[in-house]
Image (cartoon, rainbow, N blue to C red; front, side, top):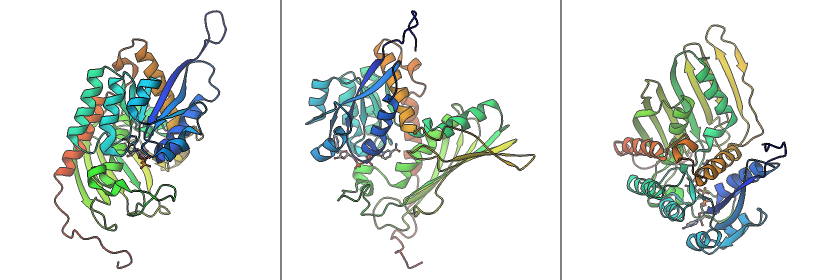
Length: 374
Ligand SMILES: NC(=O)c1ccc[n+]([C@@H]2O[C@H](COP(=O)([O-])OP(=O)(O)OC[C@H]3O[C@@H](n4cnc5c(N)ncnc54)[C@H](O)[C@@H]3O)[C@@H](O)[C@H]2O)c1
């Protein structure tokens, strides 16, 4: 960015804090922030100033990797002392609301991990607290920012697929009861309905529901049904689900999400089907850069690779764009003009998913099939 006299304009710093220093904050958000900050001499530069976690070792592991970042004994103390511009909320799901509400009340922009909350009432209270505080608040749907998905969005908008008829998403993983992100002893809250709010469906389907509307230029899913299974793992939350939906514009949507798919199997695939062609993305859903994307022409049946930036992580783009929006809102820009995805829209998708899951009939055989018996 150049000043009128031709010199590089000074950078504006977006001062970030993190509440919840576990797996996603450490392995994905922080590297994304550092990558977004690297080499930027103008525009908005994100900088991590403070972190908090009830586990001091987790907080220290994060802070040590961010030059100048401090640890704080709790979020209230962090907000009072460090007065961050933006707070990334990456606690277990049932703790998103109190952290987001405290950050918003202190005037910080809120980037809250998905799902918005463990239940609907808490998600509504979270959104209400952010709206009343007048701060920028968003769900951390990093997959919106994956360069391959941006290429898909542009191809759809250009009409290259003709009339889009369907979006099909497979987003699965392996999550046994004693799962740990890094081999350390771990309290697997994802298997606890009270803290997670649900299983594979609530954890993984929000990405696909968000992404569908983003890829289709705002044509969001408005109708949704679900089937879940408790098939492999002996915990009380579902370990697999299929969801079938339709967007307001009439595009059919299928999502398969699971905790019971071994990681070595093909398990991350996105297809957008149209009358002129189909875009297929493999290994782009998730937190990392890379993957493959190709277009299959309806007349030729040929697969043509679609180029995209394979070196930039979706978290880096997310931090960069949220930082710019947070600084713009702080400077007086209306929230609705600084950020294209209102939190109320994310809340509507959260409501749609929870309502679909509330209509699920109990599986005929509630006990999981033991590994090895099939
Ligand atoms: N966008 C993505 O791709 C993605 C990926 C993984 C996780 N997530 C989401 O991020 C959130 C965190 O997931 P995770 O895998 O990092 O979990 P995790 O268990 O690894 O980390 C959670 C951390 O929060 C801390 N914590 C607990 N109570 C807290 C409080 N009151 N204040 C501050 N910190 C607190 C815990 O001590 C822990 O260190 C979840 O909501 C999850 O759904 C999103």
